[in-house]
Structure formats: C-alpha cells, structure tokens
Image (cartoon, rainbow, N blue to C red; front, top):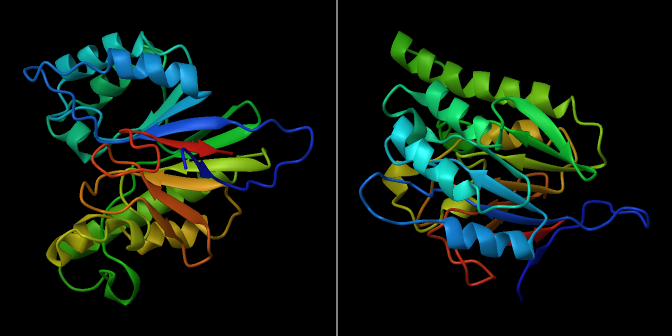
Length: 249
C-alpha cells in the first residue's frame, strides 16, 4: 500500500488530487540537512505538498530562509501552517513573510482552494482530550490557556465556513484526537492537542485532517464523528515508507 485513499465524495467530473503531507521538518541553521531533493521527488509524485507545522526548529528567520531556498525545488503548490517551534523566537510573523514570499500558501485561520479541494489551516493548540480536557476554571492563567484553544477552534470554524468546494482538507499542527498520539508519554498528552479541534471539525464534512507535533504517535485515527485523521510528522512510520504520506482526495 503506497497511499492512504480518502473518500471525499468524488463525482465523475472531479479528478483525484494526490496530496503529499509531512510535518515537523525542524529546519536548523547548523545541521546541514537539505530538503531540496525530497521536495523534487514529491513534485513528481503528488499534486500538492502540505506542511503541518514546525517548519523551523527555533523560529529563526534564517531557518525560514533555508527552507525557502529548498522550496524552490518544489514545482507543485505548497500549503501549510506554522507550529509551536516556529513561534519560539517571537519572529513568527517574519518567518511567515519569508515563506509566503517563497510561494507557500501559509494558512492561519484562512482557506484556499486548489484544483477543486479546499484547504483550511490553523496551528491549533493544547488542552487535552475527551473527559480529561482542561476546563476554563480557577486561576486566570488557566482560563487564558483554555481561551487560546477556544480562539484557535473559533478561527478554524470561521475558515471552514468559507469553503465552497465539496472536498476539503484540514491542516493543523496540534492533534485533534488522541488516536494519533498513541505511544507518546501519557503525561504529555494534554500538551499535544485538544479534542475541541475535532469537535469543531465534526460540524462539517471533510475529506481528511492532517497534523504533526507528536513525533512518537501513530499514523491514522478518527474523529468522534468518524472522519479520518493522519499524523504526518516526519518521524511517523507511514504506508509510503517515506517521511511524507500520500493522500488521494
């Protein structure tokens, strides 16, 4: 099996879109790793490249510039979101500017349509899953933490309402379900994502949801509403046997 096949309600006139999806590149100034050849290979295999956050390791503009240079080898549209590492230095706006200038469709509460498929993206945030989700109760710091998750889910919902395409893909950095973070230490589950993201997504019909962030999770899961979720962090074993997944939408 070389691809995850996703049923997005395709009609006879809709062509299948092949999406290569990968997260957690963690581009650094000093590690000498180039993604140029990988992006070139992906361009031959897929129609769109999706990047699910943590594009840089420390959120440095120089790291973004290195990635922007490597993206020149990609001849297909690139769409994605930032991750928590991209905020580390407080220069995320400059990082975003550099990547957008390089041609990447970087989403932060927006949507874009490519070849009949709508792509919606937000970073998401932490907070936990199911009955163990952190509630907005107690100290102001706790309420502020939960408020950040709620704000991300609201921005996600607003973006999803703008999608007119019959098929859609949601791009996150944080996980919307616990299924795809299995094998991570239980102690850090609350910091890997939030069920509130899945609750929002399940108000809509989507073709696929992708995220990164959990390096030791597993590839595939489902929202409570049964919609497919894929952990596409570079470190996760995928059906392709490669650092990226291929989704057919």
